[in-house]
Length: 192
Length: 303
Image (cartoon, rainbow over all chains, first blue to last red; front, side):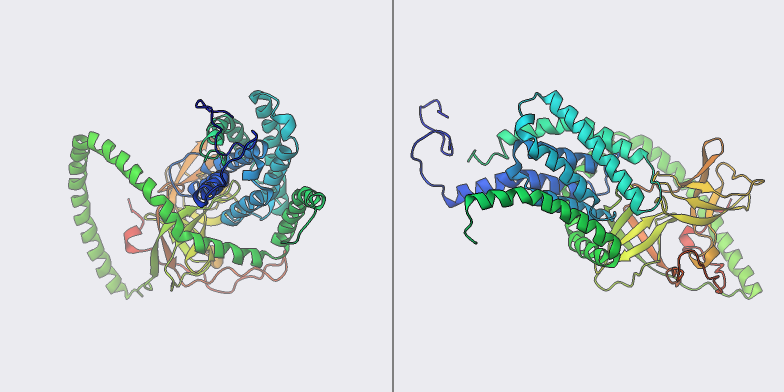
């Protein structure tokens, strides 16, 4: 990438040339930037458990985390590694006193869809990605409902997962605007 | 780090996701097979995070209060007027209450009434709403040397909100009365009927199993029934409201989703012991506890 003054940007690995090695602060900066998606997700998990007047708080959390995992698994899986997704799920499970493992499983499924299909998905426009997310979210939340019903040996109320699905579908465009901005600015390790 | 060839590295990278899937299933199995282990881990995590919640909460509390103070400023004069009128009313009620309590004491003296045992309670702050999508619970923060144990009763300023289910070193979890698994025997104050209050994850627990000939009356008070030796009798909960015909619910005095301060009261009752085998319930031979309400301040507001 050539800047206006005909020099290369410092961390532009694609263009040929010799450039100085990164110093320590640039490394720390890059590290922090690459952790932004994970930090955002962890912060949301903690923030949404604070008893504030946020309507539908309990249904909002899985919707936001699933959207976040899906977006970053497509656009920068290095910032949302599989092991990180596993621990996000574990954190939600441990904090929320649900039968453990279910949230881990549904996050990994969404992550798997994003990561394996990412090269195909990025070619499509936003609406198609959103549509696929809609199907994925519906699938995993229904799966979550089935698993929780199975583990607690009774049919748990179904309107909760309807809310989850509606929130997830509704919040994905908003979050993807935010994430796209972050992807190019604060969460971009190449922008030191 | 073991030196690996690029091919092996790529192969391993492909195996990470399937391996994690297997791990997730393993976690699910462990959760079912060893609930104690998972419980212990949970309490470690919540104990660790309990002070951290306050840290996240504080800046937002500040903004929240700031915004609210603006609203208060706008309604200053009308609020003031309302408060003054209310104050006159309350002063009148204060004298009535003082008279009644004196009379009550005199009557009790004449009857040689055995005084209710003094209750010990702790007041704690709700730090987190740990409700998931499919259950309702809150997390409270406690001091290091607390005496809270599972099975104790949690009350807000007005009445019952739930029971303590798990206790860690610095935190405790309270399962709320609107949780899907909550079933509490209650008594209706006016129709004197008994019923069961069943949570269904919505804000208002439903009333079920009330007598056919005594339907709950709209607006009447709901208090606990000391049946089954699980809860003391007479703790106020809320009032009856019909969402639609034939569907009575209990509306708690304070909304269950905005709890900030709760009291955990030790009534001396032990936790319910589960029966030895599923389906076989031993009849309890302990006496049903009839007695104290939560505390003098939350005595039923008698008409």
